[in-house]
Length: 331
Image 1: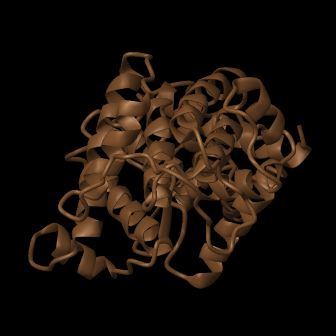
Image 2 (image 1 turned 180 degrees about the vertical axis):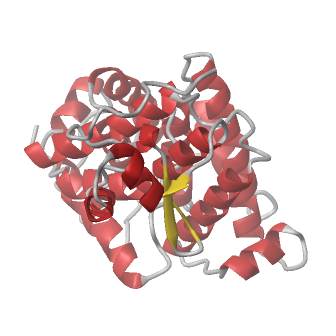
């Protein structure tokens, strides 16, 4: 594995492990304000990738029923439902993924929009601007192989890399006539939440961000540029090995890190107050300038409020940090 990929995977795993130590993803995700904001932002950016643009204010109007926007409303509702389900599976240390789940996601995305919702395509499809060549026949069998491969990846590979490979595979298969991007990103985040992570917010409101995402996918799906292998786990894994995974893994790390930082800070704050860096500096006997460098290097997790950073000894991620902090919060 490339050193840069390993570094991103290790960093995300370290944050995820610390979140689990502090209680994990909140179990009230449907009513948690910070989680709700993440879900709204994920909805807004994911739909922007598909060309459905909405400002934060417009999104709130659509979700409150004061403005029409069925594509956006459908996405938010099924994402909210699936991520909550993913959290329940995580609490049970379980993970469920099958064709019915995938069809259900697509069906809800296109509720009241089309009659063939939830139905896999028949025949050839071309992805505009992409080099990948999705399978023309046996689409359902390729989706079954996707499920099998995804389970294997999540068991055998670092979580961040497994999510990247699974997502690129789904988008390469492109099993529906429309809505593959939206369906794929909801599956991606459902899997992430099922494994104890918050949803990835892949930026999409700006053209540069969308291009970065598309180019990362194109680097990853090289093994499908000249045609699609037979729908078997081994042949698909071999094709995935041909991809360059560094751009997509890096993008996913950037899409996850802010949400993990927020949940970590809130998990600590639920039991003890956060403090400004000036107070943390005195407690740890470290200069404020050093703490700011830690923040820049993701070695210190902070919550930014009114332009100021707040943190806690338990949010120090740097291995070189002084050992002034307790290993855990008092129960």
